[in-house]
Image (cartoon, rainbow, N blue to C red; front, top):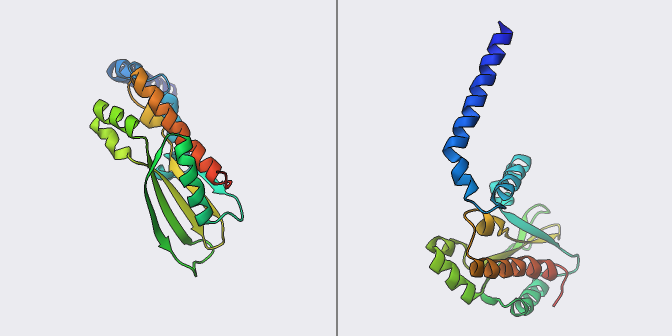
Length: 189
């Protein structure tokens, strides 16, 4: 009896897998070759941490002794090196008496490469939701701080392969949005 039940369950699973491949196989094969690994990495992060926002971000710990003002100066200097423009800055929150695990200070930096933005918007208006690229500075009451920025992997590789010119431009922006916070977290200029 149990043997028959297990055989039946196995058959149902096989039929389901075949059905899913028939329905989605050709669609999945039309995606960028890095799409599935990128989606799986994000999904694994969600399963590990339970937080979809965290799974879509990258973070850099700000070295001890580097202040929010130091980070601002660093980001401002580094944007031009990576052919980006600082299009906005907001010191959105300060609470001097913050508890150790509470946000003491938060700042947002908006960066953009206008040429790349035009290429992306001409390709799909929906990329406008990612613009401008942002870096968030968050410091806690215990003094530790992080820089946070969107992981652009899915925006670049999560769908059909991007046209060559667009891919090259996008990879330069991705590099900037990883290198600027990485270097600013160390106080680099």
